[in-house]
Amino acid sequence: MFEKEYDVIVVGGGHAGAEATAAAANMGSSTLLVTMNLQTIGQMSCNPAMGGIAKGQIVREIDALGGYSGIITDKSAIQFKMLNKSKGPAMWSPRAQNDRMRFAEEWRIALENTPNADFYQDMVTGLLVEKDKVVGVRTSLGIEIRSKAVVLTNGTFLNGLIHIGEKQFGGGRAGEKAATGITEQLVDFGFDSGRMKTGTPPRVDGRSLDYDKMIPQPGDTKPEKFSYLDAPILKVQRDCHMTHTSALVHDVLREGFDRSPMFNGRIQSIGPRYCPSIEDKINRFADKDAHQIFVEPEGWNTVEVYVNGFSTSLPEDVQYKALKSVKGFEHVKFFRPGYAIEYDYFPPTQLKHTLETKLIKNLYFAGQINGTTGYEEAASQGLMAGINAHLKINEKEPFVLKRDEAYIGVLVDDLITKGTEEPYRMFTSRAEYRTLLRQDNADLRLTPKGYEIGLAKEERLRRMEGKQEKSKYFVDFFKKTSFDPEEMNPILEAVDSAAVRQSDKLFKVFSRPKVTMDHMLQLESVSDFVREHDLDTEVLEQAEIEVKYSGYIEKEKSNADKLHRLENVRIPDNFDYSKLKSLSYEAREKLESIRPVTISQASRISGVSPADISVLLVFLGR
Image (cartoon, rainbow, N blue to C red):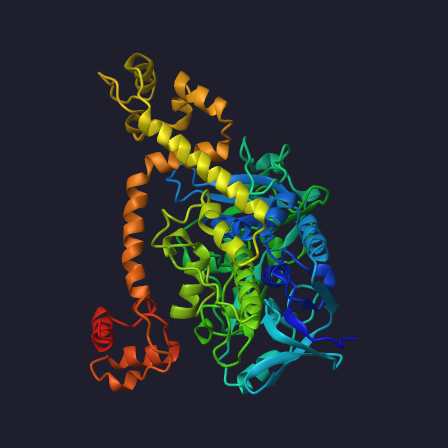
């Protein structure tokens, strides 16, 4: 069946596996996606949504590089919101509710229409390794399929164990069996492994809910989209709703604590800190009488509803009794109960920045196998692993994004340099250069890079260049053009901003905090310029940010340049840290384990102090 050798084999068809397959295949590698169930490619295992705080920026970065997640999100969206709009643009984060079934369907269609991508349904139970180099995979049917590189994206399936109350059974997801064999083989090769936990809420019948008792949560009145390419913008949206737990709900939940796998010792592993189960919330925040519950529809044509904020592994009878006590859920009917799942992961300090393992050449890890949580984090790792697998087997330079270039760069660097002992989730606060890494400029930052490596198509590059040129031209217009005080002052008065006594450049008055693009468009010279040059909302937004935040942006660029000087100080591959007696014992141990490539990376390792960095710089003659 598999006489030919593939360039890349991707194991697992979730968000990481789907992006890895698309990236490698689109760059020209013959790629085989092997997954246990071809019907669940791109499955949204948990909430039916993409994006959110920092995650929305990641989806836009994936799109800018030439990945599929943004396009597929737009095609299957049922609601769109730009979060944090009241804050500065560095915090603006796009989020979409999605039709769960259409999202998976669009992924399947996109991959099947990708040249060089083949598919096979089977469980991979082991790797073929020769002389510390992966050369293929072995499946549960005993079939050996050879390849030049392998990307593992196993999600929660590696020795997955599902918990509902005192019941536990093997599984990688509700209704699907766990994957076995890979962990044990990797441990034999010398890899460290660990266990992590995640959970999911009950799914319920929307026809049994009373939405009149809940607070509607509509989408934006002018919804945007994720992809920089032509994608449908929502004309009709579905509302979400919000309700709350209560002291009564909490009391009912506590009745089941003695049968909770979280509290009776059955679950030993660590779950996501920022997405705790409902029992964890009422235990940790005992002083709170109520927690928010977001009621999210699962699609256009289904009555299934996702109960966001009610993740739980309590016994199903306790889940049901407690949820019936929530306002609007008095007559609730369950589709399926919530559950927790434990699974194997491999601490990501065992990887290079390309996501290739240090122990086995041409073997890449992406997604939850690296200890992350979230569709977006997984998809971005899959994209990077697919790109680098293709580049490696074609003897090309690796593709690594720096911390000031992308949230994806921050994510990978955090994982490789610091590791993680709990499911890692991206936040804007993790990025020290977040003013540079905005959702509006992901194309300007990354599309040229995506085009250069052969992933982003020329159409994408031309669009980006057009937007960049028009934005710069518009900003120059503000710098060169003067205003008439008589026309300007009524606008300033309306926003309670000080009047001007004499004419000055538009740039200066536009820089004021309360003055927005909508105000500037009331000026005849500005509106005429926009009309004459056919400037769209994307260009207007880009120009406004450049004008109003230019000082902050320049300062961050300056700080990033200082960081790059340390990035240029490389540490030799086989550097012997034991020779440096002036290093602290902890620093020596961490540096020996992680083997940083540059001084900059070394400085970010937990336990390595500025004094240790000085010792290294002196020894390296810097």
